[in-house]
Image (cartoon, rainbow, N blue to C red; front, side, top):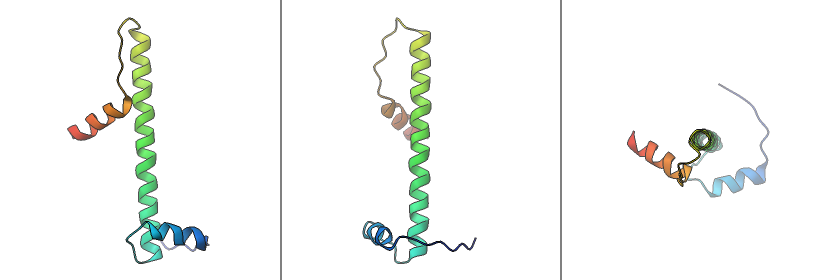
Amino acid sequence: MRTNIDLQEDLLKEAGSYSQTTTKKDLVHEALATYVAVKKRDAQLIEYQEKMKAFRDRYPRIQVDVDTRDLIREDRDSH
């Protein structure tokens, strides 16, 4: 899809300093892919936190001290 956008030149330059891309188009694609990955991870973390809270609420006498990030890593690595 062709889209014309006005990008902040200083922000584009700084983003480019963290990337191996050589074109603005590739940099925008990389930024969007990174944004999606971060938001997916955030959503997954919230989902696990909600599941852990529901478990703790349902079984209050069971002590569960698991970091939800560890659960996410285990789930990710099992696929």
